[in-house]
Length: 103
Image 1 (cartoon, rainbow, N blue to C red):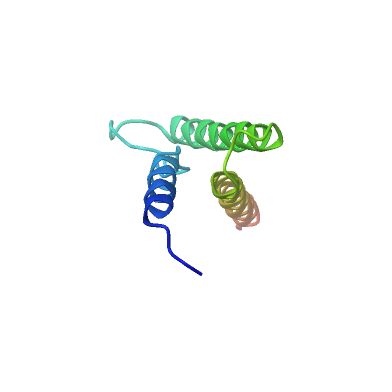
Image 2: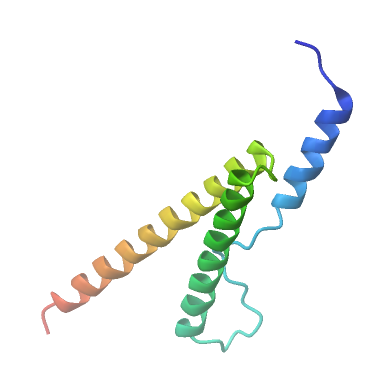
C-alpha cells in the first residue's frame, strides 16, 4: 500500500474541519447562570450535533460526502447521545436518592 501525501493532507484538513462540531460541554461565561440554562444549552448542542450527522448522512446518500466525514459525524452524534443518556440517568438517580431520604 502506497501513501499518497496529498490525499492524506486533504483527509487531515477535512477531519480538522469536523473537529469544530458543537460539543455537549456547555460554556459557562456568567457564573450566575442557572442550572436550567446550562441544561438547555447542552441539549441544544446535542441537537445540533445530531442535525450535522443527518446532513452528512444525506450527503453520503447523494454521493457528495467522503465516507470518513460521514463516519466521524455519526460517531460524534453517537457519543453525544450516549453522554446525554448518561447525564439523564445520573439526574434521575440523584432525584430518586433525594426522594428516598428520610426527613
